[in-house]
Length: 524
Image (cartoon, rainbow, N blue to C red):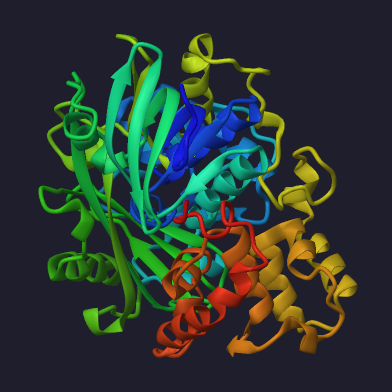
């Protein structure tokens, strides 16, 4: 293959910058492969930033006898907690016993299985509680007197995607955001792909191709790749609402509904409560997914069924929706469709691996299996490695994942606050949660608040914006306020427009001092 202007040669081209695509790019780059990842929008723009923000085994999947999936997810739950303790943390859930729904003996049996399907080192097991005595019972209606408490994990889902991309880039991958794969053509010894971004058209020649386009996976095969597939996707829409904080304790809730669904109510961003999700079959435009008024009313009504305080649509301060691309298994209801994944490897010439389905908790295992499947056709330099590796910023107490990083995270925050006494303590704590040990990179060479640069928005300094633009592919205010963080919830309504103006005004100056491949990844 001849190299030329506007051409890239690589071992692996990954199409799709959601959690599966970013995870595969990271795993492959860490095995010594040359990797290009392209995403038509920003990283985690769609499904991967529209989850319930949970790293969990999937307690309700036990009802559908998905024991293998639940066990795999429970194992991964602890692996991920260790690898990214800054963006993933333990969370205790309260499940009230609701007369007329699943009886207490069934809940107890399910939780016993959930506790024992996989080894636990970090999270306590389940137990029964009196909601008349437990603090989590106070916001609930008096009729809910009994319940169960169990463990799972919370995750900043969009940052999980970004950190996988950062690690891929640290291992040599080229990450191209806002770059659409318009067409691919199979040749005897590889693939030729035409990519289009804001900087023009780029040709990529790759030994192998990964289709990790999520809800667009089947469409990508049919249009860009012109390849048939035996797999069909069932698109399931999930919507969430955010309201002002409904309770002051650190527990989350899992509520049952007479229609068989369950809904979570989760402490969110200190001042809010996140409620979701719905499960609806979706036939619309995947690029224009939005919550419907009926979904808002449904989530409000279900929450009001449990909480003393009535929740109405006017209480909703933010909402979001995403489409989950699940493997069609002929389940009667959207809630019953399997959340497991399928990997389809087409060996008719140069390898084409398509990813169907999956859930955020099992992304690392999915990525590992995907690269294992491709390894025979590619010049891999090492075997699987991510299980014993930290994600960027997660190495709080050493290079390798450890229980200590999870159990002593608050101690790490205190150490960081002592190290940077000149920063407001709350700001340092936010940096610790977002960036972990990479807070040191963000603050490198700075010794006073004045050296952080302009306070572009309340609590948002130029130093942080520069960091996100240069090292995390942020190009717009929305990238920063709603994906790299959720600061948009806390700031004035004009914050997004103000930050966009600042970023545009300062981009040209900062471009001169940044790596175009890492920072302005839309340019070739």
